Image (cartoon, rainbow, N blue to C red; front, side, top):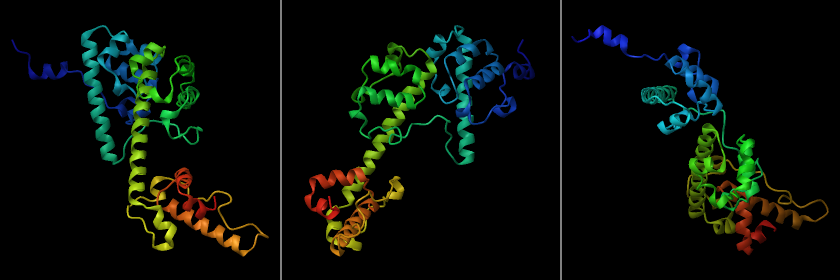
Length: 288
C-alpha cells in the first residue's frame, strides 16, 4: 500500500530560488511587498497583507519566531511549521550566496552616524531628547514620541526588549524587531570602539611624544586611518599668525607636530583634549 517514490517526490512542496520569482538573492534588500511575493509562492499569500502592515522587510524576517506568526494571524500549526522551515532554508541559501561572493550582505537601512546626527559617543549619557533623535535617525519618526513619553534615556536604552517596546505602544512587529536589532548592533559597535580605544591607550604613551619627535613610533598596529579618525588639525593649532614673531610661529608648529603625532597614534581630537585637561605638560605642548 506504500506510494511509489515518484508520488512522494511530487508531494514535497518545492520553493523556487529568489531569482526565479524576480527577487534579489540578497534577502536583506527585500521590501515588505517582496516578502509578500515570496509568501504567495509558498502558498501562504493569505498572510501577505499582515506581513506588509507590520513592515516585515527582508532585513528583519530572519528574526521572526513562531509566536510572531501567531500574532500575525497564522493560526494553522501546519502553516507556521512550514513557514519556519522555509525561512530556515532561505536563511541558509542567503548565507551560502554571501560566502560565494566573499562579502557580508547588508540592508539599505543602516545605523546612523552618531557624529553626523549630533549625538555624543557616550550613549549612556544621552538625554531623552537625544534618544528620540537617534530613533528618528533610524527612520522611526512615528514612534519617537513614545520614547519621550516613557522617559527612555541612554542609561536604560540597551535594556529595551521587544516586549517593552510593545508595552510602550510600538505596534508593528517589523519596527520592534528592527529597533531591537539596531540597539544590539549599536551596543556591539560601541563595545568594539571602547576596546580599540583601551588598546591604543594601553600601547601608546603620550609622554614619549612630549619628549620626542619622530622616535615616538606606535607599539600597536592601530592607526588613525584604521580607526576612521580625521587628521586635520583644529584652527589655532598651526603656525602663528602674521606679526606674532618667529618664536610664536615655532611654538605653533611644535603644537601642530605633537597633535599630528597623537592623531597618528590613534587618538581622536576629543581624546587628545580630554588628556590635555589632566596633563598640564601636554596642554602646554599643544598651546592650550
